[in-house]
Image 1 (tube, one colour):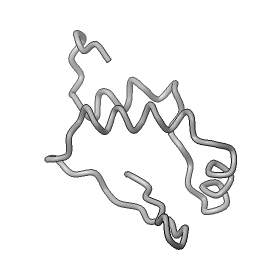
Image 2 (cartoon, rainbow, N blue to C red; image 1 turned 60 degrees about the horizontal axis):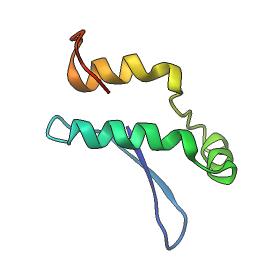
Image 3 (tube, rainbow, N blue to C red; image 1 turned 90 degrees about the horizontal axis):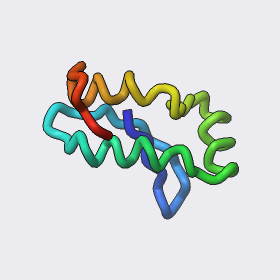
Length: 73
């Protein structure tokens, strides 16, 4: 799932990823989530939204690209 935050009001919304979403871009967003500032992380936690962690990379890779052994990400 992707979490969006409205720049106007700050409201969080959750959207499912779809088969036609760009897998490479989704992986880039996943990696970027490691660098969110503390305030955003606290807001997500207060909304009962758990972020994926760097150790979840293999699960994310498998879900986005399949279980091939030769994927370099």
